[in-house]
Image (cartoon, rainbow, N blue to C red; front, side, top):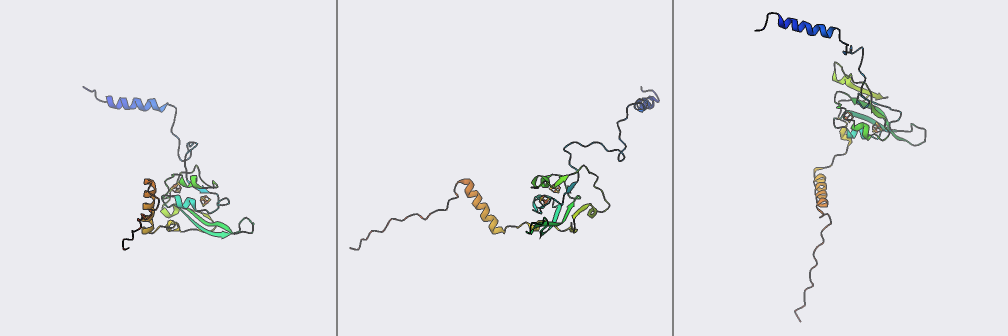
Length: 183
Ligand code: SF4
Ligand code: SF4
């Protein structure tokens, strides 16, 4: 039969034991733990290197990135090239998949060690880069040309035929010439 107060004594014993243990708790947020080398924090973009190719915007599965593109002679070469006047990354939708980082041809979009994405309003999580703010509520994906249903079906049929090895167009079968039986 359990003795009265045994549970309390046991609990106090555990408390005393841990009272003099080496502390492993860090006083977050004053002290932050070191992140792993390959950890993925919030994204940032180096606008000086961005060539406004829109690849990050197009590949993002969550439609987090919107870019306002124009043409400008930014490098003084005398030739107008694509230029990102506005660039927004919406952290409220980002799932840190890193596809945008992998696809960037000049490595100008990358993860930082920052991970505290918090705000009272979701729109505050849309971080603006560039000289002109971009509306993060507008879906950027219409910039990607969509195929019409008929084109899609034709493309699907063509791909299937090619996969089956029947992609070559069929020729009309040759007919044997009719014999002249009148004479
Ligand atoms: S990490 Fe993934 S979800 Fe986030 S912006 Fe890049 S592609 Fe989109
Ligand atoms: S993929 Fe890179 S270079 Fe292209 S628009 Fe995005 S950040 Fe800029």
